[in-house]
Length: 355
Image 1 (cartoon, rainbow, N blue to C red):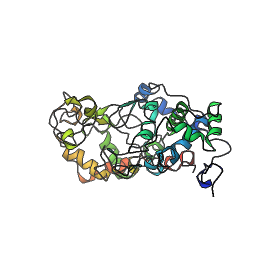
Image 2 (image 1 turned 45 degrees about the vertical axis):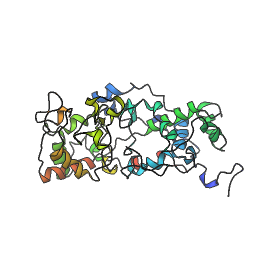
Image 3 (image 1 turned 180 degrees about the vertical axis):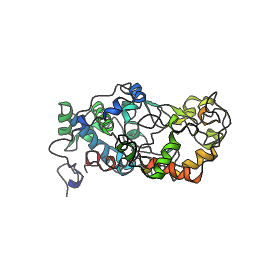
Image 4 (image 1 turned 60 degrees about the vertical axis):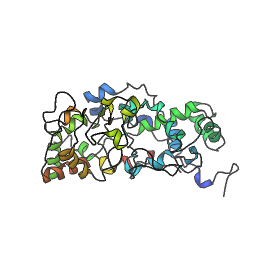
């Protein structure tokens, strides 16, 4: 059964009569006081979130009508149950060919200034339309997209609610998607629940992993810093001796500079327990494989980040450290990282598909 413009009725979005309060979904006060995050918050100049704007963005994000053949949405590759990542090493879009890199999770994006693994997009407004127009992802002409959406029975009203005018336009599509993405805030893992009780809620093995994570020699928290457990800059972490030869030079593919060969974004460890597989190419299927790599197998590189050297300071390109963690320490690190998963975030109906 179809409506008068040929849209299957089951594909119409089901939305609450009163929008979800996206504009009120702020971070806890301790996040606002985090010195590291305070340096980053607001730099990107993102738009304010309105309930109606983020509602429109939610529909756009989950609507397969944004792809050329109506088969792929943003949410196809960014799945809420996996903290808006994918469980494949490389997602597959409309072309049927695996994409170049692993699909990262989406949350706490207001602290990011550049996007994609190679940081090629400055700011969310410059990122959100790229997958829609990419020939292997959604392959939709951005010039034709507004008219396509205007012909659907639900976007005129959603645009009127969000922007005061029922005309669908690319600026509004961009702004609404950014608002929805900024509303994806995740901060309620068991780690967070333990902050006010000296982590009495953690098991013995989780507490051990926490101590290993924050102790000086491992330097885990030097790259994965602050309450968001991330860094805004790219890092050469020693996955390869020659990244370009291995098939992906990261930032180096954009700059052509030897010192950028293998630089990739340092992603957040929040929700890392549900975002497997790991690294830019999804090479590691489990967190234990990641821990084993950093303990034993970092490769030498002429510009390896100095934090992966024996003393952890000084110039890049030093010989990589060998932590040789014990079995218990490895198991502890894995257990601790699972405490960063926000189980409420991955089921929050305000972020789920309305279709």
